[in-house]
Length: 296
Length: 242
Image 1: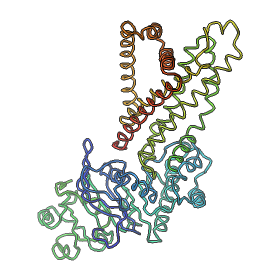
Image 2: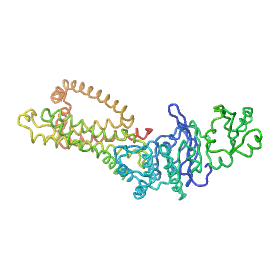
Image 3: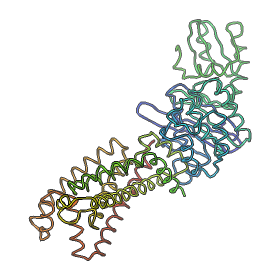
Image 4: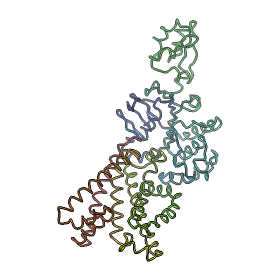
């Protein structure tokens, strides 16, 4: 993602943000046009904070955020940029005493590119009753409604904060297909945060792994799937693995395991002494951590 | 354009509750038979409650971040809040007058005898006092709200109002004993009726400067207060993390 030739729709450049007991540390990554970027991390890793920074709801303490080329906390330019952004919050249930169509009636006028026919079609596709009060919807249906709102104004950038939370597996599958279709025009991009690595395996082009406010990895998903290796062996390999892996070694019941960025190098160093396999995103998610996490 | 959409949003959000106006004000009208001063304050309280309810609706529904994520500036959100709040206050004033006159139309002579002259809903100074007190309350409340949010902002506003009113009463009483304007002030503050106090001040202004100059002075004062209040609120809200 760094050094991508086309101008990015969203950029975080050395962004820091401190809350009470939480610090986002020098986060840098970008979302290029026409790609889906998966932001994956455990609860409290900083995913929602990054979404809020992207929308200008909070200010960075250091570094720079650029939304469609604009500082999202600047007034007019940022407001104009937000017209080209669709977002889904992790809790989309505001104005729950109103009906679905009434909430849409409130939101639609703010977007010059709002497409009512598309919104109606999405509601029908998603099985969201337009006359129903928002409070009567299940969490999953509320999320579908929020997605329909975000997808109905032909946004260039979709910011989706844990959109698959509360969704049943069947609809999650359909949503992932839908997102793939959305970026089919190579103009729309998606930043998609989740705790479910399986979501990203299906659709993400780029992966950002964030843990305790620090980006542990950002780059193409295929780099992980094609080139990375996970090495599992007995405890006697701990020292060798620790010097070969930039993320250190995790201790398991069977011995130790570590992530290496070059599967050929891993085979050369550890074949015959340990099990060397292609890494999955799950491996990357679990093992990309500070070296101080050894032994966890 | 954006302002229109924000105001339309507020109208749509409160529309489901608008029917409540009729029974609430009908209930308040009973007070007009018994005590016009209480009727004034209950109507003002209702108008302010409506205005504040509209202002704080996003806070109640945890929708601040939702609205701030729309393609609008924070300055537009704040400006729209002032328009809808002051609009709510103006509607409250209209209902105060309307229900007051309706009550007067059906009041018995015995009830009307308690009113001692023209009640506040039937006089220009009474309606201006209603709007002025409401406007000052809104203009002082909103910067607190935009800076600290509802629970803290409202608490600080109430505490400040208590201090200001108590202080104002003490100062007015002191002035009434030591200044030539004491006749007006002593008449007003003797009963501690603040609506009468404001009406008295408006009448005194009008008597001294003529009605047009007095009106201009009141409008100029309100404009200065509005400008300071809006500027503070925008500055506070632009700095808020949502």
